[in-house]
Image (cartoon, rainbow, N blue to C red; front, side, top):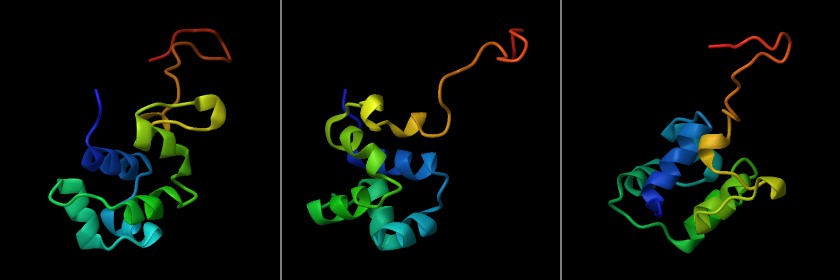
Length: 99
């Protein structure tokens, strides 16, 4: 099941912990345009997609954004994995259960 482009943009922005303003400044996509993309009221052009995915901070999401696939060994991840990583259930220092 594919995620809508509007949701993907929002997931990338939120995973990177960026406000719309910060995201807009980083990508060069106008704030109002970004809001329209995230709300799904405007479709994203190829030019704007390239602006987003060519930003070094977001290239790791290119494969996921375009194909819904990931390849962690190639550095291609989904936003939900960006800052959270795998869930640890034991402490590496004591092998005791955590959380």
